[in-house]
Image (cartoon, rainbow, N blue to C red; front, side, top):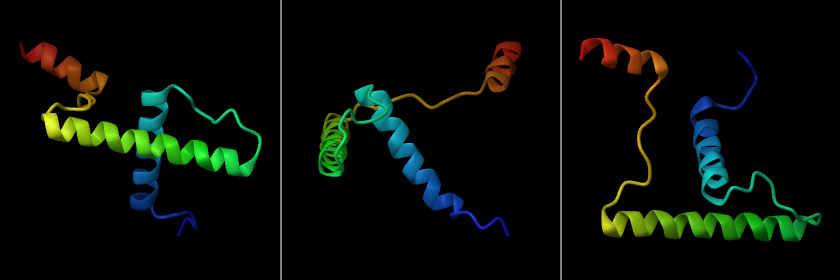
Length: 79
């Protein structure tokens, strides 16, 4: 046993963090205090939820599915 957190739980957290970084272009909050940092995280999460709701209501995809370089090579060779 590795002793680390379950991979399913971690994957969801890291997916949300990477989406927040891409959407807001801020990898960390520029604040020093714990309360301000928490407020920044809450505001970023609320903004992501509004973005997801807007995409759901207008039926527009948020992003494209990632295709690895190996898969792209296979698609190019098959064409």
